[in-house]
Amino acid sequence: MNRFFYTLLIYLATPIILCYLAYRAYRSSDYRGRIGERFALSPLKPTKPAILIHSVSVGETIAATPLINQIIKRYPDYQVVVTTSTPTGSATVKKAFSDRVMHCYLPLDLPGSMSRFLEQLKPELCIIMETELWPNLIHQLDKRHIPTLLANARMSQKSATGYLKKAKPLMAEMLNKLDQVSAQFDSDGQRFIELGLPAEQLKVSGSIKFDLTISDELIEQQRQLKQQWASERPVWLAGSTHPIEDQQLLACHQQLLTQFPNLLLIIVPRHPERFDDVAQHCQNTRFDFVRRSQGIAPLATTQVVVGDTMGELLLFCGVSDVAFIGGSLIERGGHNPLEPAALGVPVLMGPHVYNFSDISERLVTAQGMQQVSDSDELTQRLTELFSDQDQLDCMGRNAKALVQENQGTLERLLSWVDKKLTRT
Image 1 (cartoon, rainbow, N blue to C red):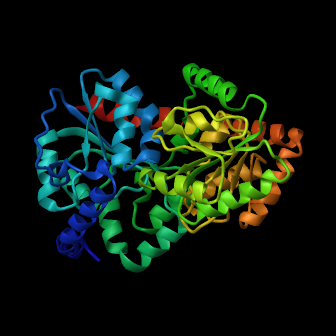
Image 2 (cartoon, rainbow, N blue to C red):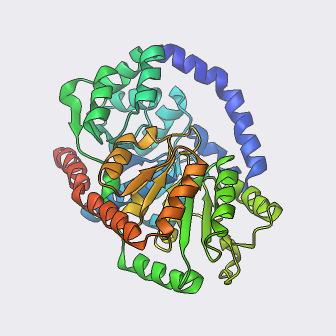
Image 3 (cartoon, helix red, strand yellow):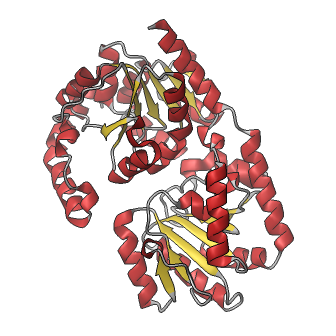
């Protein structure tokens, strides 16, 4: 497939995309409004030269936060524009940066929309986080000679195989138009080269997610919440969970309660439109539970806290003794395990971790993380860990040490920004 046929498919799919957005708007108020941004019809008027950073949703935005903060600090004469594609990503940007950045949705990848968008912004450079390669966006950036970096780039074997079979010419065309791909690991870099990236445009920089900053303010908030919620209780976190997985994890917790009757579970669904569904399932299965959004501290009898607020997963990690990372018991590829690891919290994941295969492998090798094959084995591992405080402590120390040993990616990415802006 080349860009012409890709663009044709996008045009044909646009009515379906609009129907999908309408459906999501019906299910969630976060999707309502701002439709003009989806087609670059809402005027953007930066007051200073712009730096464009695209981080599609929550995970990418959190990963990009240290980079964005440093760019704001180093380049006060530039307007940082952060785009996302989801309402949750939008909420994360607004919470993290307030009015220190300009924010909008990245338009649909149509030639006219992307052209209007870039004509309004006229960015000096563009940073795209992780895997957000959009053919018409890349084409329009290249057409305007805007230096573009694919930062914190990752490419799973599953994704690479799919692109090789169905879209290698399109991928090669895009990759050749990038100024640099800063891959997380050697394996990611090699897959980009197999897809057509010139070797001289590749730099293996490590994962910026290792450079997660834990502020003193956050540590104090975690300490206070632990004191309020579970000062004398064991706690485990199930973060970024998905349908079916929620039921498995709650069933696991039900079994654990027979051996650890004062155990508290904090369960945080990946998508906010599912908060009510998870709370309803807790009610149907007769758990004594509270919702974080109610602002009520769990009692000694509370068995589950439903984390139905945005941007607090890292806070909950610091309250927990063990963290299970969702999207891994089902075939979603898992989510970022480094947030609990950076806090010295032992990590558990299921068998499906292809989105974070290198990071997961390193954590397992360092004995800071364990993988389980299914929910039954998860119950078994949690039972073993809550029965062995020394093992819990050792896993936590190992996880934190691995994170600290792999930091430094942020400075390598900032070096690229420095070189490009000093040339303008």
